[in-house]
Length: 185
Image 1 (cartoon, rainbow, N blue to C red):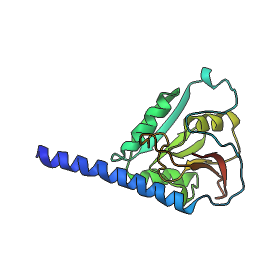
Image 2 (image 1 turned 30 degrees about the horizontal axis):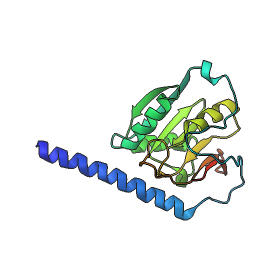
Image 3 (image 1 turned 60 degrees about the vertical axis):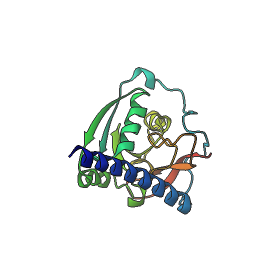
């Protein structure tokens, strides 16, 4: 029984890794949507050009919804915890997570492997903490932000020195999208 469980875990981990690579390749292939640009900041993940705010003195609460089989989601949760967030980590079936996404009208092609709610916004996927803090500080009139898929090198999707360029998208309740931030490597 132990051997079967061990093989099952190894297969699950391999499947998540393959899904991440395939998702990253997909998003590299389709590129950006050509939507108007909200922010043209280009930076390396982990570095922040976010505005100075008093977020450090606030308790930053975020609720993360993830499925029980997603390992990279836990990596993202650790990333935001290490950067000052108090996390409520809730494991739910995918159908219940999808209902949360629908509440904010997240475009289906902007979905990722986990969903979060913070300060009245939806935060979807492997978004760098600097962008989450920028969202909270600036309070733009949007429904939320998303990093679609699972780009290599994003928080929770680290693979050594490998990094893939990606966009953080803003989305409106009416389905309109814009680039919120862009990371080029």
